Each structure stands twice: as C-alpha cells, then as structure tokens.
Image (tube, rainbow, N blue to C red; front, side, top):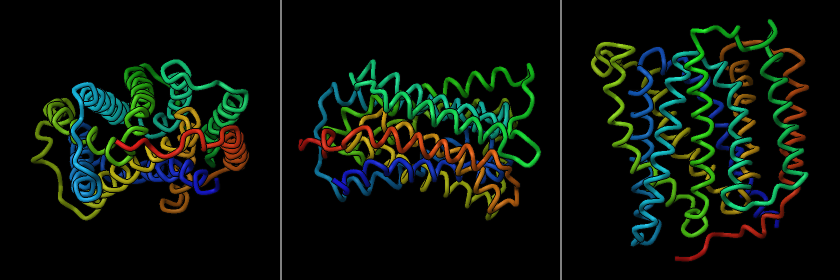
Length: 311
C-alpha cells in the first residue's frame, strides 16, 4: 500500500533532523560540555513526549518483562548518546559523520541475528551501495577534498567511542522493535526516553573532565537556547518517534538504510546555512546513496509489518 510505504519511510525525516545536528553542534558543543548537553537534550525530549503519550494513548500496565525491555532500551540509548557526544568532543563532527555509516550495518546484522529478519540480496546489495555512496560523499564532498582530517593517536579513543555509539544505537533500534509492534512507536520511544533521563543525569558530573563548572559556566544566549531546543524537541522527540514509526511498517534492517542520509544532509545544510563548499563527489555519492535506499526499500513490502498489535 502507498500509505504503508510512506510511513515506512518516516525514518528519512529522522535522519534529516539528525543531519541538522552537525550545524547545531557548532553552537551547542562550544558552549556546553558534552554530557551536560546530552542530558539537557534527552530531558527536554522526555518532557515533550510524556504528556503527549498520556493524552493520546491508553493507560498501560506493562508486565515486569516489558519494563525490563524498556529499561534495556534506556541503557542502550544512554550508552549510544553519551559515547557519541564524548566521541565527537574528542574528535570532531567529521569523524562522527564518517563513522555514522557503521550504524546501518550493525542494524542489518542485529536484524538478521536477533530478530530473524531475512538477509535478502536486495538488502545486502542496497546497504553496500549506500555505504559506498556515503563514503564517496564524506571522502570527496568538500571543496578541499575530504571532510575528514588526518587520523592521529590523539583521536583513537574518540573514534572507538563513536564506533561503540553506532553499535549501541543499532541495538536501541533493533531491540525496540518487539515493543513497537505490540504497542506503538510513540509509547516505546517515550517510556525508553523517560527511563533514560536519570541515567544521563548520573553522567553529568563527569563533565568536570572538560570544564570545572559545567552548569554554572553555560552562557544563556539565543544560539545556545536554540541549539538545546533543536536537540531536545526535533532531533530527540520528533526524530526518535519518526525512527521507530518506520518499524511499525518495515523491518529494522530496511529502516536502518535511511541512517545514511544523516551525514549527507549535514553536509548539505552546511553549504546552505554556513556557506561551506562541496565538490562533484557529493553528487556522485548522493546518487549512489539514493540508489541504495531505493533498492533496500523496494525489496520488502511493508504489508507484512502492518500496524502494531492492539494491547
């Protein structure tokens, strides 16, 4: 059905919103240390999502097993975002963009091994095509060549954290699918986000590694407030809902391929909003990426992953 295909593609909107983080982070990371910023992001996202769930969905009585599943998602989420923000602080947004390409590969692997999804030629081939396209964009998209600086010993730990982040976000995606199918994308992402807030709060004191007084030294300026609002309301509340919404209508391994759009959108927004330049590699890689997404999503009819079961 056309409607199902459209809803299965909602993760593309999530990836677009996450792509905007590469521009927003230029304001956020400069003013707020990473673990404080990610705590503010998630707390604001939870505050936006929870009232919507209470007003629009039935009151749930989750079983102990389901609460443990939600708590597990909260742990994966905390690990994914804290390592992403710290890894980006230790390296830069370019490394974050490059290592993003590992997330859909991890999602594909977990979808096949943990969720018993079929590894079809279309999925494997389309994913590889999207990987190639994203690497072309990131290695030759800028005016001066690649967007990734030379690799040095000083960023090894940061790169390792970014790879851990990619795996943890893949786990957050794959292991959330049973709950998404039973309840809904909105409920699953909301309760997982709410449960993750105290976990992120416990990590805030570690920001003393970067700055002696993380909260007291944050300047309250319009760009900083705008950055926090974007991260909390759009790249958390809205984007996570769109990401999980796609899994109501498609396999996790099919949804994962949309993640490749994130760095491409980030570079494109850098051109539009920051006056950065791109070369022909951006267009070649973007074409390969679009072809890979098309191949993966043409492979599966979303009808087998219809709307979630009533509970």
